Image (tube, rainbow, N blue to C red; front, side, top):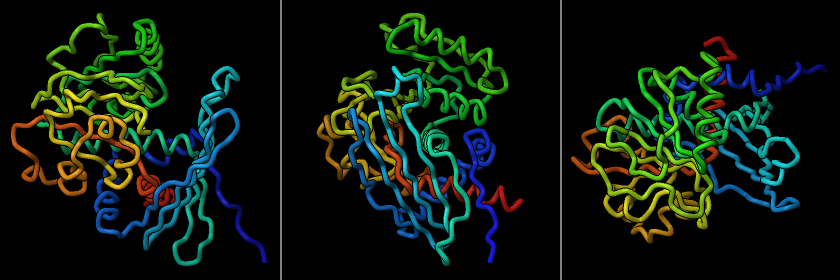
Length: 317
């Protein structure tokens, strides 16, 4: 008995299979499915590798699909000249357990993370944003720039890095990519990264692994703040000053209690932290005239959403 060759997709092919606009819609559905326990997504398993690296095992199942993401994160790869993250996302038939296809793990992670931020913008921003600030200049900043370009092409994007030269280099590199990486109206580094954030900025997205706040301004009802980069209790990007004056929401309520260092270090009362699934698509449920901080920590349910999108594309739907 012969079996058809199982398709394995590299980074470029995975990118084509999960466009941002479709992925945002899939995440909206998945956030509700997850909250209503139609997706089972247990806490990720973390095991150590050499030199401080980690292996992450993240399964998720739903009646229509099952997935397993296995990725290795090795910060020591920088001097080696190779990416920090390696791994794959495998999709399975939920009835037979057969493997359907395999996607590039870092690509799925980057795109579904940026798409979750865009779902946060569509859910929590009081109006269509015109000005974004990305804090960080790494891979996730690049993913977010692409997602903003796809969903908000009329926006101006500002960039703040750990040093002014990093922000300038990031902007210069992505401007020359044209349609492949920079579809926004304008892309600029902050002229003075030490000064207060310009008042015109509608959405701030923090994308670092900092252990001290990179954004700690007074809460503003007309500015949405999204935290993405800090994913351990020791990391913090958004300061207590911002958090204390804001309504608080997360993508994954269970995971955030263990991983949202911004909230953990600020000592938040978790009773005042809501999940995005409770308000997605229903602005009437949002607090009126109050600043909002949305913290994204990620979970395998979002990888399952990406595999749903890929499966639909592969089926010709």
